[in-house]
Image (cartoon, rainbow over all chains, first blue to last red):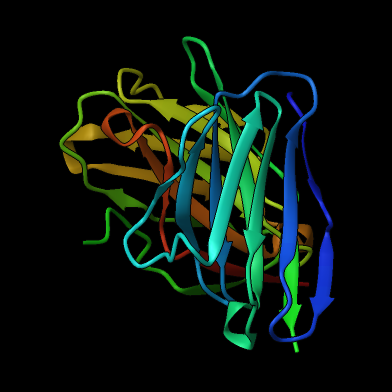
Amino acid sequence: GAVVSQHPSWVICKSGTSVKIECRSLDFQATTMFWYRQFPKQSLMLMATSNEGSKATYEQGVEKDKFLINHASLTLSTLTVTSAHPEDSSFYICSALAGGSYNEQFFGPGTRLTVL
Amino acid sequence: AQKVTQAQTEISVVEKEDVTLDCVYETRDTTYYLFWYKQPPSGELVFLIRRNSFDEQNEISGRYSWNFQKSTSSFNFTITASQVVDSAVYFCALSERYSGYALNFGKGTSLLVTP
């Protein structure tokens, strides 16, 4: 199957700093990527839909000025958590939509963010 | 409103028992997909199966089987002869055409298989 990578796999930062997470589709092009967030012992919740070359679409309750998404190429989407606070500590997972007739979606391994 | 309901929060079984994880979904879309994922403690999602709305055939893969019934909007997952390595959180998810195929996850069922 197709491979999606995320970098970094984990990050610890101080409160008030910004953190960038990269999501790459390694062997296919993805016009659409999704970003999900998972708090401990909870389910995955969609944060935003990232489309190549256009602005991301955010889910209700997700601050677009805090979670900046850039999808500058068909293989890369980035999520920047600006001025991170402890409540932003979570597991962030991206997925890439392969498109075609099957619309297969492939997940990255996730990034665990801890804000001190 | 919750579109995917996994009523079982936690299930504990003894090794070699069969176990069924329930999933009920809700959609108005005629084209949709249903998924099951396994999430071990490492956090990485492991894809198990994808089913589209036009294919109601049940599927078996080794010890795993899935029962898709549109009449009851259910997509249940059965593990036969469970093993300790099956211990994980299992998520059922729905993907709809009108929402751009983003996944809507259930709350997950935590399965513990003890020796």
